[in-house]
Image 1 (cartoon, rainbow, N blue to C red):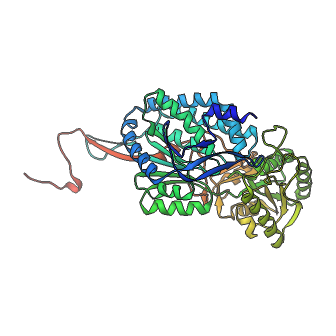
Image 2: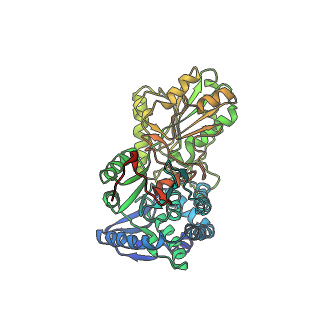
Image 3: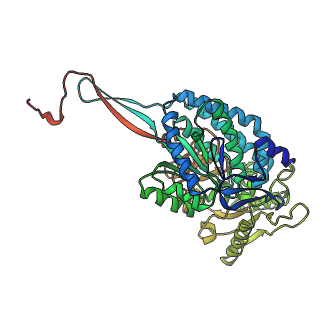
Length: 510
């Protein structure tokens, strides 16, 4: 990979400024955020911290830009988003490689993430002509009622390292066509991906003579994110990350009666029925468990297998895990890359220790790899543990490739196990039994925001509303009518008569 070529293509420098209003960049303050690649442990580049003065300038500029942007007809806003999607197509190879190198996911997944950005732009363009309200009949003669949706104002996006570009695009593409302006705080673990995206959209805004403050960027740690969450001028906060982070963000935004979209932890289960296609099931389970080194919010963390096929599924899993190639994610022959950093490695090791202490039986051993091409100290072995659903470590999400293998006797028990965790993002069942599938999708079935049949837990795509229940936060992004979360709803009543009938027949004589 020619990093210099990628940097030149995306407008990234070794030392980058901290924040931007469109294409206007500002010097920040020390210390710097250092971006180290988990691929080889080497420094990629750095960016400054945003200062409070810069932040205030950005928010003021956003307020001004909103007045212009909201009055642009929605299809015209959609045209700007369409052009952004076209620019992403041109930059897909470079941006996808950067995602892979800075975050550590495979090159295929990095390119796939950029494709998600392109797809949400396409979705948003169509949506820009469909921001529909409804008309209702009034009980008053010669009156008409209808509902409409208006832009909120400034939308703050706080994204996580595991999807360093796609999640931002999911939110901003919809927020933009709804008439909002956006301020993005990317993860401090993947700041260069944020800078690259800002450079791309800045050119599109300039080309269309749009205010640069339609899209702004700030860099820093959690304290910079707090500026957004506590700022009453920011109408909506969309935050992706841990449940712990979500509790803080949700409370702070609620204190000021702001709106929030929370996309938090997942503890996703895949049920394998005796009526399942076992080969498909194992493929779905393995990909769901080890893809992105277990660092997806939709990663398969629990595999709930019927007792009649438990041993055969276990054997197939062990055999499949022996074939997993771990190494440089830019090498397309490898199945799994590194964890994001050594802090993540430590959490992985601690989780393995805890589950053993609770009584878990490790059937595929873990450990940190240190061979050729694995010198960063972030490459780990995927783990399979026979466990019980009530174990503390099973109830909590560990962002690493640890799969807990659980046994069930009947479907009611399996669904109960699936639901008996604090999180509620994604779920799936493998079965060819129609009754089982429909029961899993019914009111007494999965309590998650995503419930799949014969596809793994990580099978989310643009077009469907993405998000989950319980400690996952309840937010929805990306598809369906998720756009409504980025707008304020208004009911209107129009009187076209020559009289004003009052409630309960009250009359005024003047």
